[in-house]
Length: 305
Image (cartoon, rainbow, N blue to C red; front, side):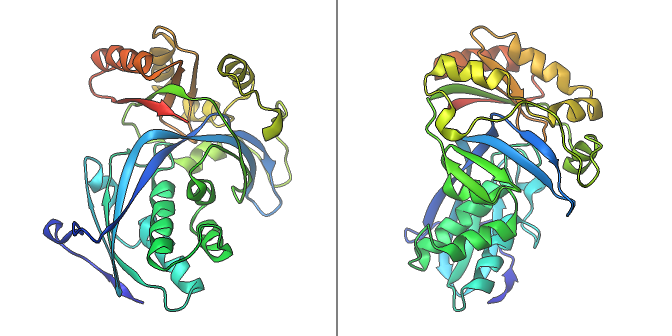
């Protein structure tokens, strides 16, 4: 596989034979940090769902690997070697000799490092595109090995369905969830993942006390019952993130104060917060209220599930 090339925006793949995939925002409805393993990694269990909005990725299949990026958050995402789209493609090429790659173009709508798994979802979309271009099944173990090597959130994003993820993220179990209206709000403040985890102050071998997370088969399917169950299952990264970035409390309060809000919580390691509503109309109404009060924030209504 040749080294990645750089192209101007005029060279982005727009031909009719380009393959296209959505890269939806990942939302951690719950995130329990069970403890820190002796190898230094954190043991997690998280109920994950996907939003109706996100990034878009195209692939024009060819022999050379390349990436261009456009969209409102293109500058933050970058098109360099560290972009997870390129990393995922390389991990797959290492495991599948003769893999046909090509020119990717990413339209970056999601904010970067925002707890929405944007980079991981982009990487998963790249793997799905390469699978299509090379006649690979999505359940091919090589594809999943490349996803796991790329990042902890990539396996659940590869599935792209509501799931319970556990371990470092390598174990993924399908979960059927009801549909919600969803409001996503990010104050455009950096929330670095490393310091958030460090704020838990867990040494290797330590266990973090907290409620047991129910198995997928024990999660309620009815919307109201599920919200009640979620309310007692925290995101354990939210308290250290709030201590690190004090303004995050105002984001949660602004969502919780909107009419018909069912649940407000931080996603991932922050700093995006979400609000759940019974339908998209209620989410849109809430978005108008939050955006009017905080015009500098990133505010997006959509659906979940």
